[in-house]
Image 1 (cartoon, rainbow, N blue to C red):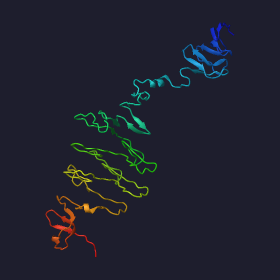
Image 2: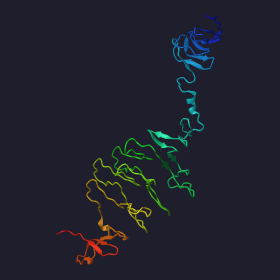
Image 3: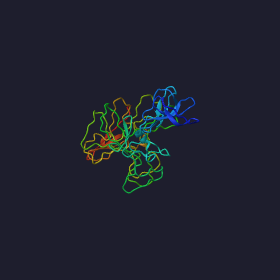
Image 4: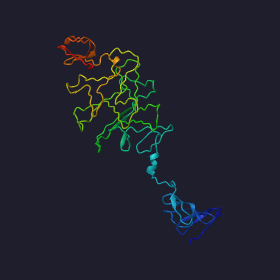
Length: 365
């Protein structure tokens, strides 16, 4: 064994010695276990004589280790971070320029207020669903600031005011038929009785206080490409706005409606006012529309059209006589065209250029 030279003050050794592992030892504890040592190369392993917490320096690389094992079976672990398995590259993911502002190949870290700005070209995906991206999926926020309700946002003369927009495209054919591809999904349900609550999956409110061009609470558009397309079956729908009520249980009371339209209030209207308005525009090809209003039933329905509150409906059906259309109304008047003396009729039909006809319904004796 090499010659020992000791000048000890407490546990400090002035000049070390080389032990059985060819390790230069500098300090020991009172149990003669080494507490500080070095060697050109990796530290010893599973050997005795090194105190728990003993520091070892690789003189070739400068890397430091600490004994996390025992004095009878040492295990030297790098002191970079005890228990850390991350590489330097991985640690650099935390080297962020600005807290709360995302950057490529950097970790997501919120700022002091808990806010985070997503990178402009970044993609957010959850369970295979893309939430935001610039190409092909475009998630945009208007450059105009979102104002507090009732407080106008900054406006310009030509740019649309859009508080929030989601634009999505897809070129992936799903493997399961009738699989949704949607830009946004909003759902709500109650998990217990909530007799005082309205459940609204989406509430859109538009308040018109001054003159404007158009105003819609909800507007749906569907565009068919000029190149044309076709659905996979005859019962599929291409619909600008859709409503559906699915009955899987009994409803005790109340109205169940696929679509509900209501006009209320005591205001006056100078122009037209309709609870439901359906219009075929002049730009549409003639006869491409089969019906302005289509009523269909695959199961028995009690009534096709039901009117309630007849005293408030002076005319049941009123058609503007144009072209080959007829004028149909209801009420009570002499049926002079048929020389009848009965002072009432149910439906009167006037064909342009022709005589009036009558359809009369009465109760059998």
